[in-house]
Amino acid sequence: MKPTTDSYQHKGLRNRLVNTLKEKGITDENVLKAINNIPRHFFLDSAFDKIAYEDRAFPIGEGQTISQPYTVAYQTQLLEVKPYDKILEIGTGSVYQASVLAELGAKVFTIERQKKLYEINKDFVFKSKYPNIKFFYGDGFQGLPTYALFDKVIITAAAPFIPPKLIDQLKVGGYMVIPVDVGPFQQMLRLTKLAGGTYAEERFDNFSFVPMLEGKSGR
Ligand code: SAH
Image (tube, rainbow, N blue to C red; front, side, top):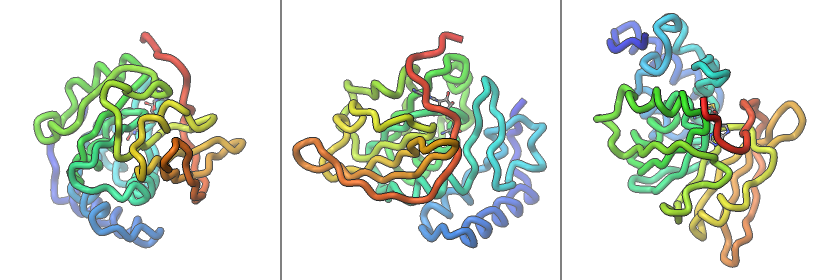
């Protein structure tokens, strides 16, 4: 069961989490505000209620995780989200990252390859609060050609390489934030799409994500 009440205690813990994120170097006030506004414990089983605001990843079933808040804040900050940005997310997972993007006013198109997680997300707790999130069951390596082009693309799993189809679906001048495999860790890259289909690359810190896998899982 997932909790549905947001107590003063939760709000206090969330405030503390936001301070931790600031100490770790997150500076974008809008990102910090979004994280402060979203009850992360709603995205987790009630067993995690007391620890939901620790800066850690947690299991969400099917061997997958809700990303660490620092990682969510870091990727979101790099995306420089503006209201009405059309954003493609690969790896819906718990919908927490998608909710942060939606809270910032983006139109979010999110893809999940695990059927069970996709089905669970049909009853996502903030469905009516965030009608600007659209859910898709599919393989993120393919993207969503029907809905392209996107202003931004965010990949929330460890990519073995930069998926060429996702570059194709990005607008010129748009950003892709993607953790790319370098052994046990992935380096966070921000790619800027250039005219002619190429891209410029900026390199950031190392993180550890669950793998981005090819194809859909029918379970
Ligand atoms: N953004 C999520 C993080 C979930 S972990 C959150 O905020 O909770 C990464 C997710 O990516 C997992 O749910 C995994 O099933 C999914 N994933 C991995 N490879 C994928 C692919 N090729 N296409 C779509 N989703 C994928």
